[in-house]
Image (cartoon, rainbow over all chains, first blue to last red; front, side, top):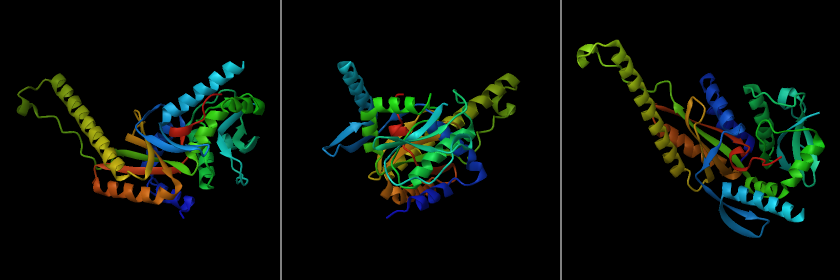
Length: 76
Length: 236
């Protein structure tokens, strides 16, 4: 069983020197701010424990969002 | 008072008290079977600073370190008050369901590749005697051309290295996202969605790639953190 805190410390050891400070800031800008990313992978997930499906992550979120909007329009 | 959203977690054991933007206490707002991590804010518009980026991220890294599955929000997601936040998230309930499924038991690792301090410098401009042309303007242009060529070569090498890493991480990484135009000094950045139990394997593989890359590049990892690149809070 992996201890996530230990793992995090191990990972951060690779970025602990002063010269890495700029790399940390770069990572924060890239991820914590929404600069835009390009999908290059897929993921297999179980939705509601029913099925395993393989979907493009971005399409997945967009598709669900569209369904929610459609449902709201229908109900309205 | 405006509230700032850090992210959404599932109901579970209480989180350790933590502080967020501007040192404000992070509150846990109950939303059905989910919990929103929020803090009050004095401003209705948020100025982005390096310190605030760190503070925002630290709240979610702490939650991840406590073993929680986190659907993160990016910095600057503000709501008029708790009620407005609850209403906005309720409208995206189905999206949050999917996002939570995606991040459950998983974390995001950042693979960062930059030039090292010992990277080879750009080729020096040729001497006038070598070129047969002593014009200062032409010399300047040649120097610029040499620098740009050096930068392009570094970028291509970093991209190749990311591909090598991707191959080494096959079977460990659930999904990968390429960060477009990463902020300097990072040349190439990849966000990786990884199961918690695979974090150690991930680090071992990246360290091997780093060791094999020589001294031209600096390969580093940040994480585990919240999965901003895969399941950030939508809407609101």
